[in-house]
Length: 119
Image (cartoon, rainbow, N blue to C red; front, side):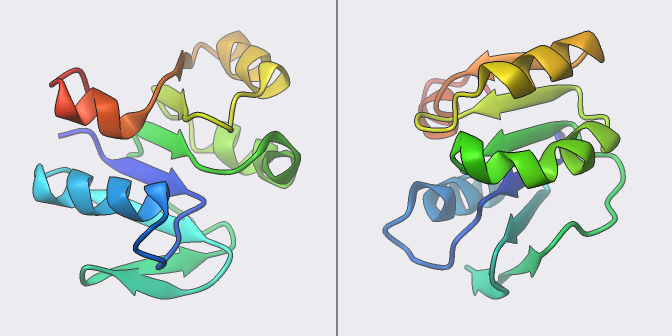
């Protein structure tokens, strides 16, 4: 399965990042939520900061481009195979940096991708 880091995760149930964590877990994906505050989403702990992680296949972004800047080194250092830029997270600069490192980039909605079986 594609181990997925949800960057910008929130314990607020009306946030799309929260729905993405719940849906990924329900679909059987190993999901790692990382947010600005610790918390929990359906029993999955939200980590904060830039935790040391290994084996990340996909990073799905729920941070606006300004908030992403402090995570550039972290995101690229995890060497994911793919980064999904959800609506509102589109960032040409980070997309270019990722592509230069051979990372696939997608401007898409994680929830829609899961709903139509294209994740």
